[in-house]
Length: 541
Image (cartoon, rainbow, N blue to C red):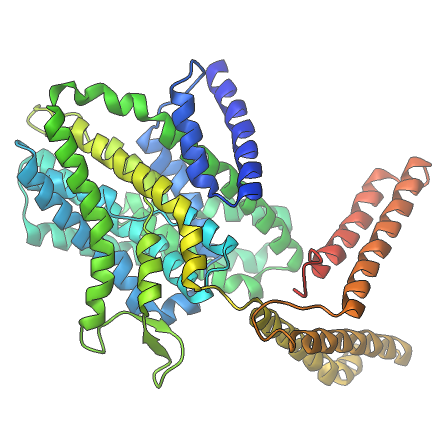
């Protein structure tokens, strides 16, 4: 137990240091953490072995749920054809092709076992690519595709994996039967996710306390996963569907205080869990190498090269070939055009191809391969399949992860920061104007005194004027960069300094014994929210 505690404390320290290095260098934290795990595996320090059941049950559901909460259901639905192509069709194609290749290359490995391997290595883990892409300013439409793919491909792959493993251990494999099980599990996962989301919506209509809502939010992914698995549906898909629906409903169903608190908790969960899983990837090298003595070096090299080649080459080939399908079938991006969408460009195909980093799902799945089949025989090629999967994770996570940012910048597929800021400020102005238009009716319905109404109107008019000034400043940002006028920069700086002065005075009151700490925290939180609304000072939010 003390060894586990030592590992956890050491891991947290490494995660913090690696993120500091990533912030300074612009390198992906996921790749750096994996390399740190590899270094740790070679040192005489406490380590921990990856337990597939723990990862699949306690780590993957909250990570997927958090990602789903922050995704856009409308954006995914708008790009559903492309998301489906990447997260379902490409996963199936990768699993089948890798399975056939492994079946032909490694003597004694059945097609079912090969497809199980293919399903394990098929799903990209977009965490590293998205982290680097957002830092590099990757265009939101491309981010939507990568996010949507990452949410749904795990469900597709893990469902295929479980069906293939069952066939490999029983000795019988029927494509029709396997396809039927896959379809039923997928449909069941969607239904379970929708039911859980509906239940959460009912509970949130009664419960208003932020701490209680936060507890419900933390429990939801595990409830969806457990219910899905108990009903022999896709628990992973249930988690994703529940997260998308709950996240879409949150702006109407939850108070601002609850959203702020829940968002902060999920950011912490993501930070720690992602850090731990990427460290664990590197830590598994000694375990992976243990069982390779039974294979010839040539077999290991050929199997590894072919596996990596299939994973790296099939994705760009798939993205390219979809452009030659009939118009109603090819991959599209929600954008301009008569039907609101357009084809992927060559640069977009290149960037999407390079976003296919593999991660913890691949290792968790491949580590869960059973030791023996139903007949008591060893699972065919288990150790070699695990090694090939580990090589794929390293090549994609470190190789593609390290080069993804420069690729995004080289292709120029970056978001227009000024255009995004303009849109946000236009929306802010519209909301303030709506409030001004309805103020007289609100005052009448609530019986407000004229002085109160006038104060509200003055405050709203000041905000509207501030948004107009921001929009005027953004009109000069034709090249996509945000240019602030000296007057606006001075105003933002002055507001930060005013908040600092208020905070210092509150601390003087506390230190003098005039203000209890409980009251100080309440007043500080008010100032914190005001400061957060100003942004970092880098430009209009």
